[in-house]
Each structure stands twice: as structure tokens, then as C-alpha cells.
Length: 111
Image 1 (cartoon, rainbow, N blue to C red):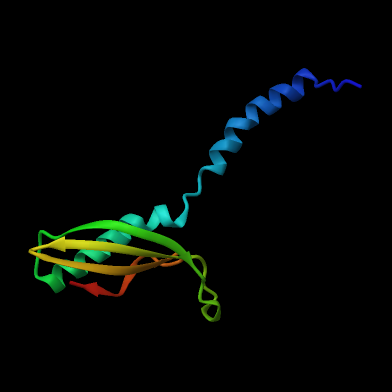
Image 2 (tube, rainbow, N blue to C red):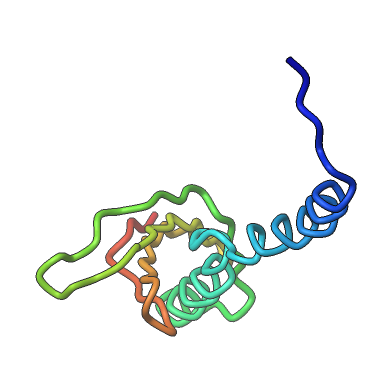
């Protein structure tokens, strides 16, 4: 038993495939989309608390966390960011939500 594909069907598949690939890649995972904002929030807080404007940061870890169901929340991501400068180091936890335009810092550890 052989399967015959008409020329019109083949042309349709070839024409739709790139569009389907483009649309499938149109959504960026939350962890990637929010990473720059999370790093910026961590740096602002650390530079202030450490009184060190030249402090730099590095992404240490990121993970998806459960939404707050009582608030009807969506996806959230927790970032752990290490900041160092002026002979000080700090670790901050930053949480970003899918529906929010900004992120917030939770308490981290300081050394």
C-alpha cells in the first residue's frame, strides 16, 4: 500500500512549515525573558545596601516555582544572583511573575 501526496498538498505543507516553526518559537520561556530584569533588580538593591556602585552580579541559579493560586497567579521564576564588589559579597533571591512588569528581591545572604 503506497501513500500518494498530491502536489498541492506538498506545496501547502512546505509553505506552512516555516510559519509553524516561527510561531512555535514566538514565545520565550519566562526564565529567559525575565533574567535581565531580575539581574537589574538585584544589582540595584545590592549596590545600595553594600554602598558600592561598581558591584557586579552573576546569575547563579533559576527555577520555576509554584504560582500563588489564591491570587489566580501564573507562572513565576526564582533567580539566585550573586553580587560582589568593594570587598563584599551578597546572594539575593529575586522572584519574577509572568503577569508582572517588574521583579522583587527576597532576603538573601551576605558575607
